[in-house]
Image (cartoon, rainbow, N blue to C red; front, side, top):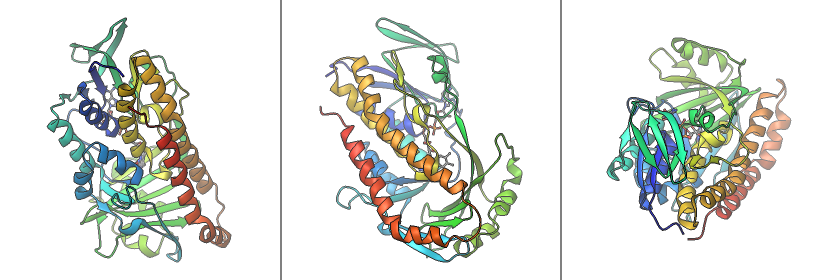
Length: 393
Ligand SMILES: Cc1cc2nc3c(=O)[nH]c(=O)nc-3n(C[C@H](O)[C@H](O)[C@H](O)COP(=O)(O)OP(=O)(O)OC[C@H]3O[C@@H](n4cnc5c(N)ncnc54)[C@H](O)[C@@H]3O)c2cc1C
């Protein structure tokens, strides 16, 4: 067990960076954070956090605040419809902690960051906004980090949580660019009708459209569809384009598509992934979250993986004698979990995008027969892989 508390610099205050700041501070390390954005300003739209991510938030002491700020789907119910609005099948997602942790939380991203940032602040972690890293110089007993304002910081460990386009990755000699997957995601925030409480997934021809409550007042919709590489759409056009892309969706989607306007918060994202072999660290610099293993969003697990990384990294540091052992074991523990999520998510996305149009009755019959089994299989395997990846201390 490493006896000393470490000086740790975290690069990036997204999900991974904030959660790592909390987890590492709770273990007694001295943590500071630098974040490129000049204010706490996070993308609109919502995010799902499934029970495995919520378990990590409980360990970080922010589960209750997160639940209060979002919307837990009753009984973890997910209702599938075809794009005309005909019901196909319902599935139930697993809870955790013997039912005390709900199966799925929907929450506005800005609210999620408000809760995480409040905890980081309450723990007294200094966060320097509008700041990046200009240089990393490692010596035998530490690392000197030159920040973009010209000041330097001495650290024992640098945790790079700077997301999919991590600049730190290149700085430590890992030359892997994000891979575009051919799919774009359109997301919008709407008022939530009181009766809409389940997660809804609509199966269109080679398209998906989802509806998810994110608070007492709000829900978000998200549609996935094939989009050409390097396509650019001006943000002012996003509401109109989103309405057009999913115009064939009726039933539960129809009222939300109809109300898309210049006043709606709409976001377009081209889906990319980052697949890195181990090691995810070089010397005293450790990549976590999307910087190490960004996944396509089809399993809604990227955020949960970032939260688990934070918890497991803190555990690994406590469980090993040397930094090198701790960082090596962290990667070995996390790769199987994150690669499993990436592989399943990629397969789901590719299968959806490659569907032919026309009669979908065979797909729906298969879903009725296997959808619940697939949910249980995925979460069973994820739980087994994640439990194998915690360190005894
Ligand atoms: C369309 C879409 C939908 C998704 N839906 C879900 C979902 O429902 N559930 C889920 O769990 N996951 C979802 N994800 C995945 C999830 O958003 C990511 O996995 C998660 O945000 C990763 O967190 P992160 O902290 O690693 O990266 P980020 O959230 O990208 O945070 C990185 C942070 O680093 C900062 N930064 C960047 N460069 C620098 C620098 N050089 N110096 C300092 N700071 C820097 C950024 O400003 C940012 O604050 C989705 C992803 C997409 C694309």
